[in-house]
Image 1 (cartoon, rainbow over the protein chains, first blue to last red):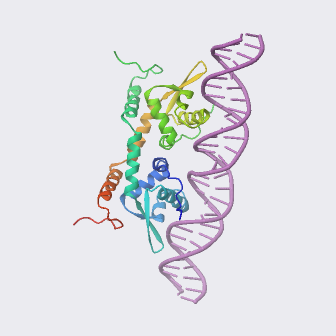
Image 2: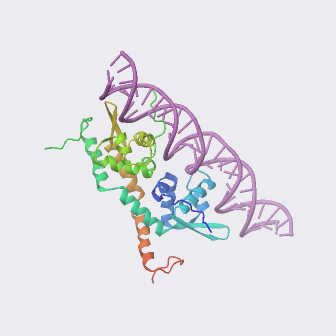
Image 3: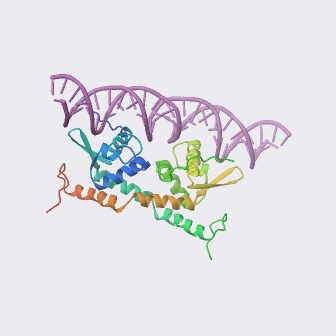
Length: 118
Length: 118
DNA sequence: TTAATGCGTTAGTGATCACTAACGTATTAT
DNA sequence: ATAATACGTTAGTGATCACTAACGCATTAA
């Protein structure tokens, strides 16, 4: 029997969408039903539900059914994988380069190659 | 005169796509032309070019033209903004939850509510 | 100069996205 | 019981994505 998951989704790519980032944060506090979550957004309940379904497919959240509600919560396993992806991505190398932004903000002279202060 | 950028793209969302993550890493080392970069990928030069154009639109990379080459490099300013987005996203709260994955991996008994060890 | 080659971008595509509208189902009220 | 309400999902959409094929323009070779 073949399940629904054909290709494993990239957790970081899925999590990066702004609304879904916000959903993950909201769920970090406690499990919540779709409507509860939707109350924090401008978009419809339906849109939120679909974002949650995507997050579930990516293994980042799980759901528990109770009455007519579906309570979503974070999946620690998936969040662990996500953390690994994030830390693989944001290396020291990139961090160094990003720090240059502050430097550039100070000395407003621009358009010159990176030039080590000998 | 209206420029090309109508809506500011979300840098994190744009950066999260796997091929583009890889491009940013490759560019962390040194500036490189499109063809140089494309050599590291299975997809075509064209595909890589378009990823770069998107990254440029998101303010994460810049280009310098020389001869018939276009040398891309990271934009420190944009990378700084990206770093802020990443650190805003990956809060301690999420990190704690992700750490539970390790715990769950140890004690293999599953499917029980989070239950504080009294 | 003209032809050939190499570079990056645009044209064109099928697939997927993010969303609202419509729906099915479960609960509550009458 | 039946009607009304509340919840979440599926149907249907325009827009965007990721990609290959075709192209335009430099540069190099003849």
